Amino acid sequence: LRRLSDYIPQGAGRIFIASNQEVWRHHGNKVDSALPGTPYEVLFFPSGEEYKRFSSVETMAEEMVRAGADRSSIVVAFGGGVVGDMAGFLAAIFMRGVPVIQVPTTVVAQVDAAVGGKTGVNLTSGKNLIGAFHQPSAVVVDPEVLETLPEREYRAGLFEVVKHGVIASAPLFRTMKSSVRAVLAQVPDAVEYTISESVRIKAEVVSADEREGGLRRILNFGHTFGHALEAETGYTRFLHGEAVGFGILAATELARRLGMLSDADAAEIAATTRLYGPVPPLNGVAAEALAARMTADKKTVRGKVHFVLPDSIGHVVVRSDVDEALVLDSIRAVLG
Image 1: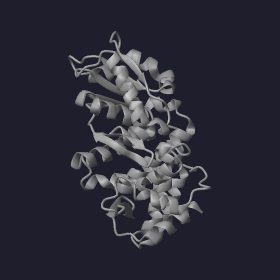
Image 2: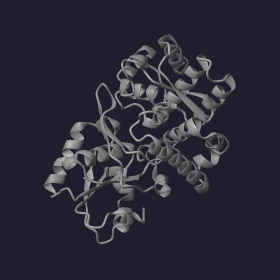
Image 3: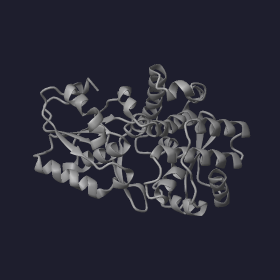
Image 4: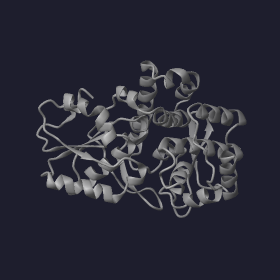
């Protein structure tokens, strides 16, 4: 974060730091130190997934106009995944596009949301159904800012790291299994390895398939089920990472029931995922309602839900030929 000024383009116009009150209270002084003598405006987005809506972005766009923003302006997204998604979307559509720098402050954002150029907001019927691809000019990751995260928020982000291990790196998965104490205690070497390896995996996938025409779909492992859970509970009950943790368990169980994944690998994925929990209680959530939600997911094509399913630890495949009864049984198995 101390090097943030190095990533501000020469000749940039007004700088807008998009954040929220909590992040700014903890780390706003770091931005001051990183941009000595450089004027900037702060845009405060409301906190929480339930506020990740068009109306919030419109409010921020109006503030930018009032502050004299033009096409030379730059947006710096300074916060978690919600701030990053909304600020990135704001940058993508403001005057048909201005540059954005992503400075993620949560594990979820550092290892996933800030990398790859996906931006967007939610609709009542589903998550991220409105958005744009808008690649950041830089992603500045500083693990030190994670020290102020509540434990629940920190743990929730680690489900995304487990995800990266399952889809593309058995060594990363094994580290998450064997080094749980060091990762949870935020031992610097452990944190730096897990974050950097996750960023490497996502960057490689995105570089090969920016617009999710094929390979990039593997990054959605756990998200089809997870997004349905978030939408069904109004985006207020679970953190995004926790919903992904649920999704990993459900997708793994589905792969096992399809005969794609051995019982031993399925048990290992589930056990390692649960090391970073617990996922909050799922009482009151109906399997049928979650299955119905999946048909509204943006990854559904011509009515077919695309599931990312592991066939070994470190490799996944995309399937759209899955029987709905097996999907329901897999959800019920995780819901208990």
